[in-house]
Length: 352
Image (cartoon, rainbow, N blue to C red):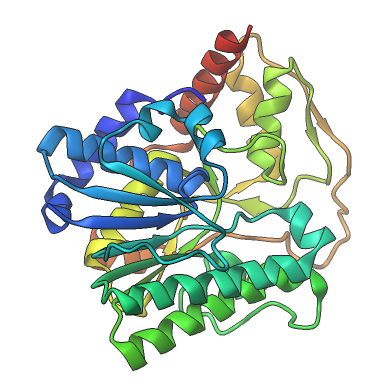
């Protein structure tokens, strides 16, 4: 896989520089380091280590070290990175203690959630329990859980942005809620460990994102649209295009996660995402215009003009992150789209 863009890594460094002293000389354990979140966190940490001489050591939990070495050889060979082979559900604890733990394992895989929801639920819950047990054993002062906005369940009509204190939730007896309920259970477990064992657990509830490294062949609409555009179009909208989403660029995502880990409140969830809504159909047309020449858009469904229900929304309030931590959306959506397309086009050029 192509390295992440240097300009993006510098963007992250510029907005996180004051944070890194908290990790100087420390050891960091990361689960899910080969995924979208983990890759951005690891690469930005290595950039800070190289620039500031932090002397940080990273223990990265991986199931397939050979695959990681193929996909990210510059990270696998970095002197600060040590691979620890295991499954997040039952990995052996590293002998070394860690002062910071980032639990970013378990992809939001729609396929796994649909085909094997029990495995999805068990992986989230057991993986979180195992990670927290390691944190307890080594008395890690900082732990970050990457949770999900899925914990809120369906966003009700009339609510433009989901705040962290929204009391809703997914249907607990619906098999398709396995991912969301797993994340709810993971958050509860973190709160209990914080209360009973004094572990400083921070919670980041992720929404929707775009950026280099985002899979183009899964359930992410923006990833699928970029794939369609790279193939020459048309960009295919499978529904009527009326639902609202919002997208935070991956470089901003990394800034938010580092800030929450270092300065966030314990057991206080923070929404992580953009609060700037866009319909799926509008998103498709914005993406179509980002290609040269512009590609076509195909919308399978037609909005019902007599429908009483408001369009579905999945858009967070980011007031807590903005007001408490000074976080914001630095890279706007059009720029985020351009950067992501350019990165994937470079990958295509390398593979041809």
